[in-house]
Amino acid sequence: MTQVASRPAAVDPARWPDVAVVPRARLRGRIAAALLDRVGRRLGLLDGPGPTLRLRDPQAFCRRLGRDGLIGFGESYQAGEWDSDRLPEVLTVLAAHADVLVPRRLQWLRRFYVARHPRTDANDRAGARSNIARHYDLSNDLFGLFLDDTMTYSAALFGGPATWDDLAPAQHRKIDRLLDATGVGPGTRVLEIGTGWGELAIRAARRGAVVRSVTLSAEQRDLALRRAAGAGVAVTVDLMDYRDVRGEYDAILSVEMIEAVGEEYWPTYAAVLDRLLAPGGRIGLQTITMRHERMVAARYTYTWMHKYIFPGGLIPSLPALSAVFGRTRLRILDTFAFGPHYADTLRLWRARFLDRAGELARLGFDETFRRTWNLYLAYSEAGFASGYLDVHQLVLGRADT
Image 1 (spheres, rainbow, N blue to C red):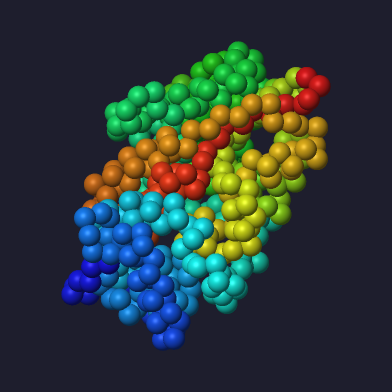
Image 2 (cartoon, rainbow, N blue to C red):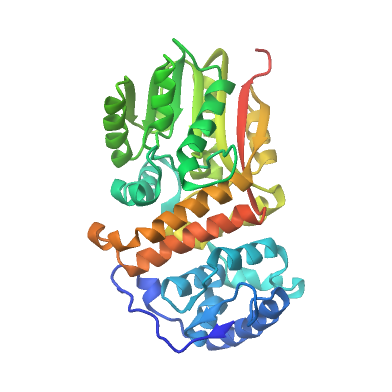
């Protein structure tokens, strides 16, 4: 845990109020410092040949960590109070030992610093629109900085070594696997819930399917329609909440959208899919997952990721999804896991993001935003590299068809 003399960059308090102010939590800061020393040495994150933390402001770092736990850990990075040349590796070590970072005899203290979700982040219709806009409507050009030409913002499925040149084919491989699994072909009535920037809808339409996609992101809808027109295919993209969709569809596709639904609304989401699926149809879902006991422990916890990246969501477990769909006529018929491929996808995105970070200012994003998204991408990569997170493609249908 190397200490360096350089000071963090200034943070705009109007844009980043909680990042700009260091809490006064002196006692909690001292407790956090002792815990950090213990954990850092045990995991090899102090001075040594492996990935290490470099503290620019140890006192501020420990005060944030002591008062706000992992939210404080993230805000300290946003503020420039710590850094690492091997950020994903540091975070991978921490993620791999997440269950034992705090000694069991002290874990009861979590209730004093673990925040609960603000009610404003709930995924009712108004909240869902707001939550989606806070991430996906930041700027299409922002996402274009680090995504490949397919503009696909979900795990790729690589057929060999994961390199930038292989990313677009790997995204198509992922999409085609879902389309194949749900029988998408000429005349198939396809519904996509969560448009992204249109690549899945375009590939389904190229198979001759009749494609309707729904999204809550105005930015994504506009670009998806332009991309479909440029590809010479007919795709309908509606700015609509999934709860308001009507009709009957032979195939329903939804890629990494259920994580944003929120546990409170999982039964509603499952019931909507059941209502919309035609007899004999199939549903293809791609979802990030975590172990069930971790999901249960995290379900009420307000995290740094909620606060700054994805408000209102919860990553499900497979048992939780099986139970939710078990209350409908739907059943999970097939599962396919490929978590390590997501770690590779995120590694490539982050490298591209850092290579083009100089363009952020032109788009209206400051240095704190750059650090925020650098941490987000590294944090996510670490989750998959450590096995803390996984990603699955699920095929669902009715048990009697």
